[in-house]
Structures are given as structure tokens and as C-alpha cells.
Image (tube, rainbow, N blue to C red; front, side, top):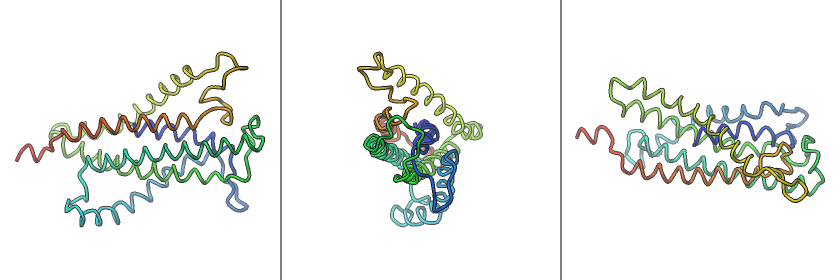
Length: 234
């Protein structure tokens, strides 16, 4: 689910950025560079993770890594839900501003009064979620897999990334089919309309948040039932 959310961010946020002001002073950041920010946030958060989170949480919990692998994955999943919930809130603000100021039809015209760097909030949140999830998941797969399957276990993380891309494609097709207008004069456009100002990306983000909550609930149940390898040996 985390990889599905990340895939959606890397595509939908570009469409959002096209309608926003990407200037930093006199310098204009190319819209196509916006997906770079989640990767940059991962590098930053990863450094803070080892220098701040692990030492501080180790003192609180007494755990050598600050928190167990599954706890860190759970923290990442929870933060990913916050990231798409915020994305839905900001998209509602952006869409209402566009309609209120007459940008409804001109969806590729940047709104100079609204900065694209508000998107950095959702980028930073998904970066934090990715660090917690991926670090915890890789350690979990390596340490909990049988000795003969450690390399295969680590490969599961890469497989999850591919499944996230497939899942995003399937979900987008379902949403487009379910929300496509049957009568353009009486119904709103599809949620994922090419014209982002008449589409409902905010509804789509909130749908991702709901799916994330369901996924998180399933994860909590499974992790509660799971017994770590060392505990089983003991």
C-alpha cells in the first residue's frame, strides 16, 4: 500500500504542480523536477533517523534499534496515511482556489498566488513513511527469514515496489471507469479527469487514505499475531 501511494504521488503531484507557482525568487523550478523532492526527503530523513530517532527512542524503549522492525513498519504506514490525508486537504484548497479565480478551464495556467512548495509537506511525510517502512521491512525480512532464504527475503521489498505500480494502475482504471461521466451536461467529470480543476483528485487522495487505514488495520492484526524468530527459539 505504501508503494501504491508513492506511485500515485509521483504522477498526480506533477499535474498539481502544473497549476501552481514553482518559482523560488527569480528561479523557476521545472515542474517535472517535483518528483525529485520525495527522494531528497528520504536522504534527509534517513540521516535524521539514525542520528536522532534511534538514539532517542532507544533511551525510551530500551530496544537496541529504538523500536522493533514491525513497529517501525507500522509507524511508516501510519505516516503514509497522514500524507495522503493532507494531500486531499491541500488539493481541496487548490481546486477551490482555481475555481474561485476563474482557472477552471485553463488547467495548465499556473496560479501565481499559490506556491507549488505546499506540496513539500506531503512529499516530506511520504519520505518519512518510506524510511520507517523500508528500513524496518528490510531488517525484518533479513533477520526473520530462514538462513537459506535471506537473499530471497530481501528481494521481496523490491517485489512490493513493482506490485505498488501495478496496484496503482489497476486502481486508476477502476476509478476512471466508476466515475466517468455518462452525460457530460448533467454529471461531473471523472475524479481523474485530465483537467485537474474539474476532476476530484481530493476525493481520490481521501480514498487512498481510507484504503491505507484498512491496510493498517490488517497489518496491526497480523503483527500482533506474529512471533519473532528469537522468541520462538527461546
